[in-house]
Length: 275
Image 1 (cartoon, one colour):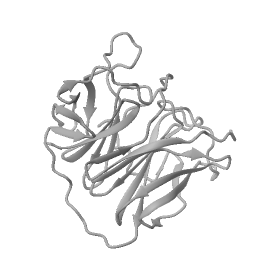
Image 2 (cartoon, rainbow, N blue to C red):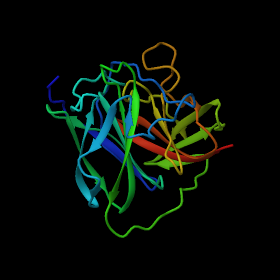
Image 3 (cartoon, rainbow, N blue to C red):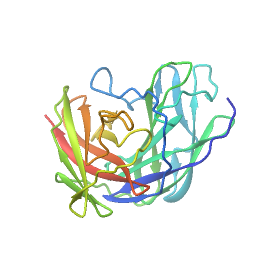
Image 4 (cartoon, rainbow, N blue to C red):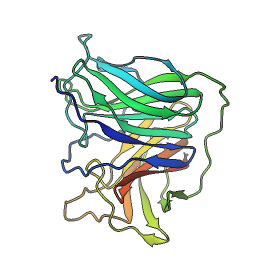
């Protein structure tokens, strides 16, 4: 497949502050296997099932950059044929290893299989990139992860501590539920604005929310989609979004919820411990 794809603006959360671009509605719901505690955690390998995430540059400068990479297949060639995952061929997640910076974007793929997206990464430090992909020849979803660094004056920070309510751009998001090592539990996130429940959440990538969970230390990756989907006649458009979430073991986890309202995607971040 050699078609060039239309650019899709991403969104970023850095140190608890969200800056997002508007996204269009998406109607098609594609299968995306959630990463759970069963089997090896996602995102810990640069190569899986013969597919490799190859970054064009492993050391970049702070500020605005063109982030480029390829997915190289078992034959050593860049892959250009992917099954859609929630309306996109590829989802790119970038985080600082301290988990105080989070970017969820959707790059553009060139005909030669090189993916590219403009990112603004403001601080020096250690970062990791994750790609959720479903190569057509593989027939399933995998998550690859690769480290890169931003040169400069690096000052390590602890994982941010948070309460059960996150404020973002005039919205309040409250988290109910606990993480339990090796077991699934229901997490419910409730969205309010000005103290009033938000009951008209907009679909974002074929769901009312997306939850990325990352473990501090090794960045074990869990990407969860909510119970139900827009248009199924059952699932309400807020204020509650429920996620059945399983984490691979004990540790401190950062949770990043993407939700869409008023034609803007926002991200609320939380820190929980799984015992």
